[in-house]
Structures are given as C-alpha cells and as structure tokens.
Amino acid sequence: MKLMTLSLANAFQVAILAVAAPAVTLAANPYSFENMECEEFLIEPDTNPYYPGGVCADPAINLSGNVPDTCIDDADGSTVDCPTVDFDNDSTYGVGDTNPILQGVVQGEGNTQRVLTWHQCPSDYTLLGAEGDAAAVDCDSDDRDDEFVNLRDQSWYNPLDISKGHRGFIDGNFVMFLHAWSPNWRLNAKGNDRYDLYVRRSFDGGETWTTTPASFSASNGESYSGDGTVTCENYRPTDNTPGERNEPTACFEFAAGANEHMRNVTQHRSMNITTLDPRYAPTKATIEEGCSDGLFVDNTVIDGIFTCDDLSEFDSDLRDPSRYFMVFETGDNTTTEVGEAEPEDLFYSRAESFGDDYVVWAETDTDTADPTLCYPNDPHDDANITDPVIGSGFCNEFDNMNTGGDTHASEANMEANPDGSKLYSVWAQWVFEVDGDYDSDIVESDSMARRIWWIDDYISDDPDNVWTLPGTQ
Image (cartoon, rainbow, N blue to C red; front, side):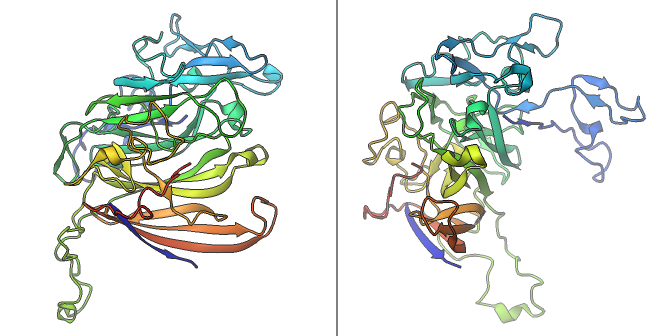
C-alpha cells in the first residue's frame, strides 16, 4: 500500500438503549421512554405526573470498567489488595471496599494505591505470551462471579482508574466507541501515569462487544467476514520512574465474533507521553447516479464534465463500511501537573475489517493482502518491539499526521471518501520560538490540510516510502 500525500501550509459509562419499534406511526419518537426496554422500573410509566415515562433502574453499559489485579502502596512499596466489591449483602449493586474520595480531608493525604495489572470481562481470548505478572488473572480465574462484571459495573467498584475523551458512531448494528483511559487517576493527574486510547466495538447495537463476526450484514446490505484479531497491552512495572521503562506486555488472540476487552491502539511506552483529543471519520455514503440533479437549470452544461461516478476501476464512490479512520493527539506528560498536557503530535491510521486491524502501510483486506507485514507484528527494524509482540499477529500501524520535528499539532478534523481510500484532515500546527519552552513565543501558527491516499494492492519497494517508523513512539 502506497501513501500519496499533499500538505498545505496556511472510565466512562455509556447508556445504549435497546429500542423497540415505534408504537404507531413514523412520527413516533423511537428514543422516547415508552420505547425503552427496561427490566426494572423504580417508577412505572404513567403512574407519576412528574415522571410520565417512568424511572428506569437498569444500569448503563460501562465500557471502561475493569478488574484491578495487582496493586502496590506507593507509601512503602508493599503489595496491597486491589479494590474489591462485596455482593454478599442486601445491596443490589454491591458495596466497594475502597473510599472513592481519593484525596482531601476525608483521607488526609489521600489514597496511595497504584494499579499495575488489570483485566476486563467478558473477554474470550487465547494468551499468546506475557511478561511478568501481565495477564496472570483472567475472567475464569478472578473472584468476580456477579452478573455485573464488567459491562454493568458501577463507578465505585474501582475508583482508582479514570477515563475521558469518549467518541464514537453508530452505523446500522455496528457501534465503534473509543475513549482514553488510565489505571491510576491519582498518578495520572500529576503526569506519573498516562492516558492510552482504547477502542471497543459492537455488531449487534450494543448488546455485546466483540471482534468482527465470521458473518456480519453491514448497513449497506453487504455481508462481511471477520477472521479474528490480536491485541496487546502494556501494563505497569513496579518501578514508577518517568520516561522510557520496561513495561510488562501481554498479547491476546481472539476468534471471529469473540468477546473482546478494550483494545489499546496507542501503545505508548513512556510516561512522558500521554493521549489527548482523539477523532474518527467513518466512510461517507455511496455517491449514486443522479447526485447532480437539480444543481443546474440545464444539466447539459455539465455533460462530460461533472459525473456522479469517479470513472476509476476501483469505484471509490461505492461505500465500504468496514473501513474508518482514526487520529489521536499526543501530549507532553511532564506538563500535566501544572495543567493539561501540552500538545505534541498527531497520529493517524485506517481501521480495516471494522477495526480488527489498523494500517498505514500494510494491507489486510485486499486481494494481495499480507498481514504478516503489518507493524508491530513485523517490527521493521524497530528495536523497541520485542517478544511477545513480534510474530503475534498484532496489526497496529499509526503514523505522523503533522510534519514532526519541532512542530506541535492539535484539534484535528477528518473526513473520508466512500470507499475509505482517501482521508482528508485539517488541524492547527505551531512552533515555539524556543523548542521545549512552552512559555516562549509562538513564531509559527498555521491551519494545515492533508490528503492521504491508500492505493490498494500496491506497496512501494522504496524503503523511504514505507514503514517510516517509529510511528506512534
């Protein structure tokens, strides 16, 4: 796959409601309370004038909820129990054992627990390899046997983590949701932990969160086939020193349609880097015949000039819903303690097979696709990639949107063409007079635009045009 570009200078909970069919007419609101599926009403509909639609007690879907497995006390470095939930009581939703007020007068100097490893359920994977205590506990060996884990978790079950920056879209029965997450809110607030960007997907409108099924009927009426995927996670070492660290890593293989925990697409390795504003762009609707009707009083004036078909053999006007684009922003985590992290760079990728893979240079959904070439499965001479990632099948390519160097970039906006072969993006870009001195004057500030073109079934043999790593690192 070749990239052709033009550069121009100048812990969240999501309520996804299962909706019944409109009651009478098309004018009925499918999202009204009367059409919401609810297992437990605190106030039944039409029984209280102040709540005519009733009050539903069903918990929202928690897409960032997880079970912390290994924790230490930063006060003395000792191993301590992680937050747990007691369901052996009269409480419907369980009682947590960790005070959610982590700092302030209630606890004096605050909670000093630090989470090193964690897992999320349901998740049906085969462990491909792990370092240290990474992935030592899974959904079959943990002590959670309640019905809540983890999609119905309440926020007080684990008050140590934090999530933000939630984004997503719904396309027929397909749901893509992304969010930034850190296992340690207390440390993250001071730049001693970081946000990574995570993605979750549903193919049945939010009922389950899985990999791409073996057979899936998308919004365009076409059937698509998943063949499984691999994800990897970087956990936290006992040593909490800033900068580059040897973080325990584990890789997980999922079959098509298997329950999947949240997928880390940033794969940061340094605590000096954190994740800021993510964006996404699904492919646009098919451009159909008649798209120019009504644009001109006399349509003959555009005969042979303006057409609704791009006339290419690839038919890029035909929508491919299995592709979408993503960009995230990195930030200087050393500045977090005095405010939000200063923006650094933007990194983009194209999701293929509804997000089973993320590619810039490799191809996974074309006639000549060879997923084994995908970074970091193939490290392409990146010495930072080690076991168990090498040869795992993990396909997670991201590359610089901005020019890099001493430029800073932020607030990207993106659009995609129908078949997902072209990404269009604009963003703010600037340079400080003194590189690294955020108090110095901004000497360059521009609105930048770029078109990135994926050419299917073609990968350049010029090493300067492919796998121009280190990618997100």
